[in-house]
Amino acid sequence: MRSSFIALSFVLALTAQAARAEESEAAPITVLATGSEMPIDQSGQAIAVISTADLDRLQGTDLVRVVEHLPGVAFARSGGIGSQTSLFVRGANAEHLLVLVDGVRLNDVSSPKGANDFATLQTGGIGSIELLRGSNSVVWGSEAIGGVLAVTTREINGVEASAEGGSHGTFSGNAVAGLAGDRGAISLSGGYDRTDGVSAARAGTEPDGYEQWRVAGRGRVDLAPGLSVVANARYARSRTDYDGYSDIDFSPVDGPFYQITRQFTARAGLRYRSDIVDLDAGYSLSDTRRDNYDPTSATPFQYGFAGRSQRAELTGRLHLPQNFALDFGADSERQTLPRGGAGSPHSRLNSAHALLGWYGERAQIAAGLRVDDHNQYGSAWTFGANASVRLPADLRLRASYGEGFRAPTLYELYDPTIGNVAYQSFGFSALRPERSRSYEAGLEWGSRDRVFAAISLFRRDTRNLIDYFSCYGVNTPACDAANAVGYFGYGGIYYNADRARAEGIELEWAAHPSSTLAVQMNATLLRARDRNKGGFNFGKDLPRRPFATVTGSIDWKTPLAGLSLGADTRFRSESYNDAGNFTRLPGGMIADLRASYALTPKVEVYGRVENLFDAYVPTVAGYNTWGRAGFAGVRVRY
Image 1 (tube, rainbow, N blue to C red):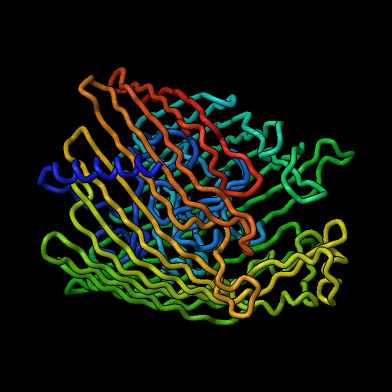
Image 2: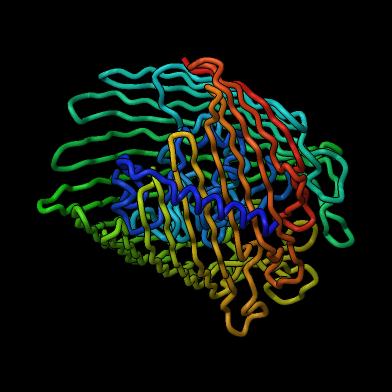
């Protein structure tokens, strides 16, 4: 394994030395730094963009497999594709990553922590992905302690369709159609994915499948010069089979259970652009419902959860003289648990922010404040700043500082299964909001379309982290109250677990020595630890955060017209499955091979082999992963 990485590094060195000194293209555009469009190389924060071409090149429906190629990213999945999946950015908890789809927040209000389950988000219909690593709560609010991931669906003028099939009875079909003109644009997309899967439990033999169908649309109508009406909507219905637990040691075992998840997101608003001010106003809705079933029971429906977020917002940028700009915004969000009975549990968060920046040709600096006013926790202020400066020898130095704030979720405050009953006696009402401070410094060299290298150093200190304590077998006044209403006679308590620290180094390296060859490599060294002095786990690693992750890819357009070949490697080191560091998760490397061939300018066939060496690299103890698998498909554009 070590020799494979040495060989890859050697190839990278050769290609970097051979790179041509050609004119660079414009830097990718991002909205994650300030909320307004700007080139990535003007931000003091670490941002990566995955384009439509990258998604087509990497192939497949698994969004996590694509995002895993970026530095600072690790994940945990309880089984094969479609199983519950959490994404960790720079060691942050899954709920600390804000996920946006066409500007709508996808974080699941119905889940205990409010994190997004990436099992239900596939690549079909997606046009681009942006990932900001590190805190940016000034612009994006309470969920952005660890980062922001923004997904944008495809907007085209024409028709695109693809279909692929392969191992484990897997099939994926997607189609996008759109019209674009001088006065507006509209696009519609739809897709269907299914797989027989593998057993979610490592010790099981019964395959656990996954199925999803989805539909999405977005449109724009120009009312006047610079003024447009914009709208988008997405609906997805997923069914996921999952396994149960042993009554003896609680290890995963075969089971007939399945979950139906329904997600609906929508946003409508106005957009205005001028030389003086840019404005975006809108209303968005995100609704998630998860129902769990046991088909062997006399009453198959077992339990379910539902969460809804409604958000009104106004953001903008004021273009000031002398290269200054003021980004600002105000928003109001209401979250509810619709199944909580009369007077369903709800919360209200009102926020406002301002970010003043100077964007010169060779240097940029921005700083801002945000105030969040929560109906239960009062007001909280957060501060953030970042800077970037171009140095000689094609170098760019950047640095940032950000503070974060996250209020307890409705699930952490209320029991959604027994109605609108606050857990006052359990201490839930005494929960304190989570707070964080993030620091980052980075040095970049070159341009992203020729030879590019970057190193980033980061640290994040988080306090008042909210955790869950199981009251199984524990008799205290608080646990007695929790056990009285918990499932099967026992429950648990949410509490503030105090402090954690994540710090590390990210390395990025990409080379394009010619128009036919591209090589990329990313590496992250991370140390994420419990810093709660006096606690049982002080100094121990946070669960499921590998110390080292390395990804590499090589793409070659062969001399045979239309034929392209590619290879990917993804390595993760050992980690621990639990906060007490009792169960170790083995590390390993997964390698993929890819190929595509353009039959005509509009028709392309492609195929890949995932996990070429059939490696078992678990991310959750006791759960299975896909072994070697092959897929083939066709893509058509008109």
